[in-house]
Image 1 (spheres, rainbow, N blue to C red):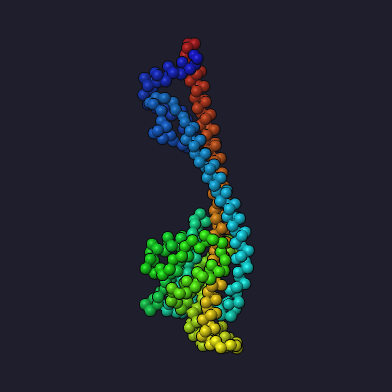
Image 2 (cartoon, rainbow, N blue to C red):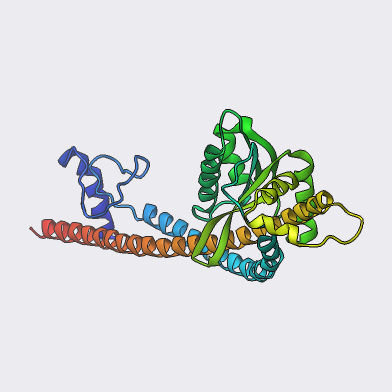
Length: 325
């Protein structure tokens, strides 16, 4: 009771003794806001700001750990499909080849990205490569357009290349990916886009921490015939015998459509794997950073609390000594 009364008296007379606020401890890196400051002359150290920040960091850490577990679960589900889909487009590469440097008048860059963020720089890499391909294939007699898959590529390309965007498709991964879904999507692109070469930009999955930006080229039947007549790898097409009533042009048309759907299916799955792997790495880094920040805040909280207790003890001892004197 006596000590409490002494503290009240000290607070009441403090403005007369010390007209300026007294800073008890200078080691705390967290400066109190104007709302947390006490009246003039009162020694004031608040731990509430530190406690609130610690609580926020703990909540963020729980969220990032949960997101990492969800990404790992999705990665396991998609990775098997991606590995199995590689057998679809590889025979086409062996038959028709992959000619990224072919010179054509009408090029279409198909940029595959994610609909959600928090996955590192995976989408920025695809957009940068798409812009580079667009720049290389642009000219006075050339036309290059974009077909965008995913919200993130749309948000980046629509700012400075809006006039070159021909088709935008989003929410591709709203449902589990399958070949039927992607083939319908490929048919929609072929119906709405005129092209001599389709250049599909995606991230090829290698491991959880490694993905490689990749470009796959699909040529139109006319360009395939032109390249076959000029020789090179496509010149071997004349060695195959065609059975049935279909002409060579019809067969090449069917092959080009089927090749595009197979390459698209593999590209979408590879990009989905890379997205989940990048999200796992990003969430793991975020969780570790939150843990480090929590350790620093805990140390700050303990120092601030100890300084407050020490200040109160000094006041009590000083008051008791004054009464005895």
